[in-house]
Image (cartoon, rainbow over all chains, first blue to last red; front, side, top):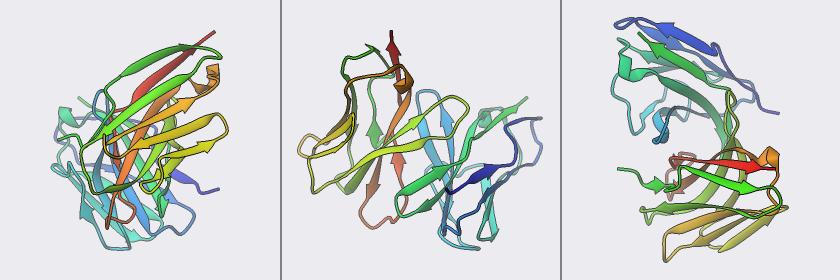
Length: 110
Length: 113
Protein backbone atom coordinates (compact mmCIF):
# COMPACT_ATOMS: atom_id res chain seq x y z
CA UNK A 1 0.00 0.00 0.00
CA UNK A 2 1.08 3.53 -0.75
CA UNK A 3 1.95 5.43 2.36
CA UNK A 4 1.85 9.19 2.62
CA UNK A 5 3.40 10.55 5.77
CA UNK A 6 2.93 14.07 7.06
CA UNK A 7 5.62 15.00 9.54
CA UNK A 8 3.40 16.57 12.20
CA UNK A 9 -0.12 15.77 13.34
CA UNK A 10 -0.55 19.01 15.29
CA UNK A 11 1.32 22.30 15.08
CA UNK A 12 0.91 25.60 16.88
CA UNK A 13 2.76 28.56 15.41
CA UNK A 14 2.83 32.28 16.03
CA UNK A 15 1.69 34.93 13.57
CA UNK A 16 4.53 35.93 11.27
CA UNK A 17 6.51 32.71 11.66
CA UNK A 18 7.73 30.79 8.63
CA UNK A 19 6.15 27.34 8.74
CA UNK A 20 7.18 24.19 6.93
CA UNK A 21 4.80 21.27 6.45
CA UNK A 22 6.49 18.14 5.17
CA UNK A 23 5.00 15.29 3.19
CA UNK A 24 6.72 12.09 2.07
CA UNK A 25 5.34 9.29 -0.12
CA UNK A 26 6.90 5.90 -0.65
CA UNK A 27 5.53 4.73 -4.02
CA UNK A 28 7.41 6.79 -6.58
CA UNK A 29 4.30 8.74 -7.60
CA UNK A 30 4.91 11.71 -9.81
CA UNK A 31 1.88 13.70 -8.69
CA UNK A 32 1.62 15.29 -5.27
CA UNK A 33 -0.87 17.77 -3.89
CA UNK A 34 -1.49 20.04 -0.91
CA UNK A 35 -5.06 20.75 0.18
CA UNK A 36 -6.56 22.52 3.14
CA UNK A 37 -9.81 21.45 4.72
CA UNK A 38 -12.10 23.98 6.36
CA UNK A 39 -15.68 23.56 7.64
CA UNK A 40 -18.21 24.40 4.97
CA UNK A 41 -15.52 24.83 2.33
CA UNK A 42 -14.41 21.25 1.81
CA UNK A 43 -10.98 20.49 0.40
CA UNK A 44 -9.35 23.30 -1.49
CA UNK A 45 -6.23 22.84 -3.59
CA UNK A 46 -3.28 25.01 -2.62
CA UNK A 47 -0.47 23.74 -4.86
CA UNK A 48 0.39 20.63 -6.81
CA UNK A 49 3.40 19.12 -8.50
CA UNK A 50 3.65 16.74 -11.44
CA UNK A 51 7.38 16.13 -11.15
CA UNK A 52 10.52 17.08 -9.30
CA UNK A 53 11.09 20.83 -9.29
CA UNK A 54 7.76 21.40 -11.02
CA UNK A 55 4.89 23.13 -9.29
CA UNK A 56 1.58 24.66 -10.22
CA UNK A 57 -0.76 26.90 -8.31
CA UNK A 58 -4.05 25.51 -7.19
CA UNK A 59 -7.15 27.47 -6.30
CA UNK A 60 -5.84 29.23 -3.16
CA UNK A 61 -2.04 29.67 -3.43
CA UNK A 62 -1.83 33.09 -1.81
CA UNK A 63 0.41 33.09 1.24
CA UNK A 64 1.90 29.69 0.42
CA UNK A 65 4.80 28.30 -1.54
CA UNK A 66 6.03 24.76 -2.16
CA UNK A 67 9.22 22.86 -2.74
CA UNK A 68 9.82 19.56 -4.46
CA UNK A 69 13.53 18.78 -4.63
CA UNK A 70 13.07 15.01 -4.52
CA UNK A 71 10.30 12.91 -6.00
CA UNK A 72 9.16 11.51 -2.68
CA UNK A 73 8.98 14.78 -0.76
CA UNK A 74 6.64 17.73 -1.22
CA UNK A 75 6.87 20.59 1.25
CA UNK A 76 4.34 23.33 1.88
CA UNK A 77 5.71 26.62 3.17
CA UNK A 78 3.78 29.38 4.87
CA UNK A 79 6.04 32.36 4.32
CA UNK A 80 4.56 34.44 7.14
CA UNK A 81 1.85 32.58 9.01
CA UNK A 82 -1.43 34.36 9.64
CA UNK A 83 -4.44 33.41 11.73
CA UNK A 84 -6.55 32.77 8.61
CA UNK A 85 -4.17 29.95 7.77
CA UNK A 86 -5.35 27.99 10.78
CA UNK A 87 -6.67 24.85 9.16
CA UNK A 88 -6.29 21.13 8.52
CA UNK A 89 -3.66 20.56 5.84
CA UNK A 90 -3.78 17.37 3.77
CA UNK A 91 -1.10 16.08 1.46
CA UNK A 92 -1.89 13.57 -1.28
CA UNK A 93 0.11 11.47 -3.69
CA UNK A 94 -1.48 10.19 -6.89
CA UNK A 95 -1.06 7.77 -9.72
CA UNK A 96 -3.79 8.76 -12.15
CA UNK A 97 -6.96 9.41 -10.15
CA UNK A 98 -5.85 7.15 -7.30
CA UNK A 99 -5.20 9.66 -4.56
CA UNK A 100 -3.66 8.52 -1.30
CA UNK A 101 -3.88 11.09 1.45
CA UNK A 102 -1.79 11.55 4.54
CA UNK A 103 -3.45 11.80 7.94
CA UNK A 104 -3.29 15.57 7.93
CA UNK A 105 -1.62 18.30 9.95
CA UNK A 106 -3.83 20.49 12.08
CA UNK A 107 -2.14 23.87 12.15
CA UNK A 108 -3.15 26.56 14.59
CA UNK A 109 -1.71 30.04 14.13
CA UNK A 110 -1.98 32.22 17.23
CA UNK B 1 -16.44 29.99 -6.93
CA UNK B 2 -17.39 26.48 -5.82
CA UNK B 3 -17.49 24.26 -8.89
CA UNK B 4 -18.49 21.19 -6.89
CA UNK B 5 -21.17 21.60 -4.26
CA UNK B 6 -22.67 19.33 -1.67
CA UNK B 7 -25.68 21.24 -0.41
CA UNK B 8 -26.38 19.06 2.61
CA UNK B 9 -23.72 19.61 5.27
CA UNK B 10 -25.08 16.72 7.31
CA UNK B 11 -27.36 13.72 7.04
CA UNK B 12 -28.68 11.32 9.65
CA UNK B 13 -29.94 7.87 8.65
CA UNK B 14 -31.02 4.83 10.62
CA UNK B 15 -28.98 1.67 10.40
CA UNK B 16 -30.26 -0.58 7.62
CA UNK B 17 -31.90 2.23 5.65
CA UNK B 18 -30.63 3.88 2.48
CA UNK B 19 -28.28 6.87 2.64
CA UNK B 20 -28.36 9.22 -0.34
CA UNK B 21 -25.65 11.84 -0.62
CA UNK B 22 -25.92 14.44 -3.35
CA UNK B 23 -23.43 16.48 -5.31
CA UNK B 24 -23.88 19.18 -7.96
CA UNK B 25 -21.29 20.59 -10.28
CA UNK B 26 -21.08 23.53 -12.64
CA UNK B 27 -18.09 22.80 -14.87
CA UNK B 28 -19.15 21.02 -18.07
CA UNK B 29 -15.53 19.99 -18.63
CA UNK B 30 -15.66 17.52 -15.74
CA UNK B 31 -15.43 14.00 -17.13
CA UNK B 32 -14.64 11.81 -14.12
CA UNK B 33 -16.19 11.81 -10.68
CA UNK B 34 -15.16 10.21 -7.41
CA UNK B 35 -16.40 9.85 -3.86
CA UNK B 36 -14.07 9.90 -0.89
CA UNK B 37 -14.81 9.05 2.71
CA UNK B 38 -13.08 10.69 5.65
CA UNK B 39 -12.97 9.65 9.29
CA UNK B 40 -11.81 12.11 11.95
CA UNK B 41 -8.03 12.37 12.29
CA UNK B 42 -7.51 10.41 9.06
CA UNK B 43 -7.00 11.40 5.45
CA UNK B 44 -9.81 10.82 2.92
CA UNK B 45 -9.93 7.39 1.31
CA UNK B 46 -11.29 6.52 -2.13
CA UNK B 47 -14.71 4.93 -2.20
CA UNK B 48 -16.12 4.73 -5.71
CA UNK B 49 -15.90 6.53 -9.05
CA UNK B 50 -17.74 7.00 -12.32
CA UNK B 51 -16.80 8.13 -15.78
CA UNK B 52 -18.97 10.64 -17.61
CA UNK B 53 -19.71 8.02 -20.28
CA UNK B 54 -21.68 6.03 -17.71
CA UNK B 55 -24.73 6.85 -15.63
CA UNK B 56 -24.31 4.26 -12.89
CA UNK B 57 -21.53 2.39 -11.16
CA UNK B 58 -22.02 -0.12 -8.38
CA UNK B 59 -19.62 -1.61 -5.85
CA UNK B 60 -21.18 -3.71 -3.14
CA UNK B 61 -23.35 -1.51 -0.92
CA UNK B 62 -22.27 1.63 -2.77
CA UNK B 63 -23.77 2.93 -6.02
CA UNK B 64 -23.01 6.20 -7.73
CA UNK B 65 -25.46 7.74 -10.19
CA UNK B 66 -24.57 10.44 -12.68
CA UNK B 67 -27.07 12.75 -14.39
CA UNK B 68 -25.02 14.79 -16.83
CA UNK B 69 -27.88 16.90 -18.10
CA UNK B 70 -28.60 18.03 -14.55
CA UNK B 71 -24.90 18.15 -13.60
CA UNK B 72 -25.75 16.05 -10.59
CA UNK B 73 -24.39 12.91 -9.02
CA UNK B 74 -25.47 10.94 -6.01
CA UNK B 75 -24.04 8.23 -3.80
CA UNK B 76 -26.39 5.56 -2.46
CA UNK B 77 -25.40 3.38 0.46
CA UNK B 78 -27.64 0.38 1.04
CA UNK B 79 -27.93 -0.82 3.72
CA UNK B 80 -26.32 1.86 5.86
CA UNK B 81 -24.11 0.68 8.71
CA UNK B 82 -22.77 2.53 11.77
CA UNK B 83 -19.25 2.24 10.33
CA UNK B 84 -20.39 4.37 7.39
CA UNK B 85 -20.58 7.39 9.69
CA UNK B 86 -18.00 9.77 8.23
CA UNK B 87 -17.64 12.84 6.07
CA UNK B 88 -18.13 12.16 2.37
CA UNK B 89 -16.57 14.30 -0.34
CA UNK B 90 -17.40 14.17 -4.00
CA UNK B 91 -14.63 15.13 -6.40
CA UNK B 92 -14.37 15.80 -10.11
CA UNK B 93 -11.70 15.93 -12.77
CA UNK B 94 -11.79 18.20 -15.78
CA UNK B 95 -10.70 16.96 -19.20
CA UNK B 96 -7.03 17.67 -19.82
CA UNK B 97 -6.10 18.31 -16.19
CA UNK B 98 -4.51 14.92 -15.56
CA UNK B 99 -4.71 14.02 -11.87
CA UNK B 100 -5.99 17.31 -10.52
CA UNK B 101 -9.27 16.90 -8.63
CA UNK B 102 -11.76 19.51 -7.46
CA UNK B 103 -13.47 18.52 -4.23
CA UNK B 104 -16.86 19.40 -2.87
CA UNK B 105 -17.71 20.83 0.51
CA UNK B 106 -18.48 17.51 2.18
CA UNK B 107 -21.49 15.88 3.83
CA UNK B 108 -21.28 14.45 7.33
CA UNK B 109 -23.24 11.18 7.47
CA UNK B 110 -24.38 9.85 10.82
CA UNK B 111 -25.80 6.34 10.85
CA UNK B 112 -27.79 5.76 14.01
CA UNK B 113 -28.73 2.49 15.66
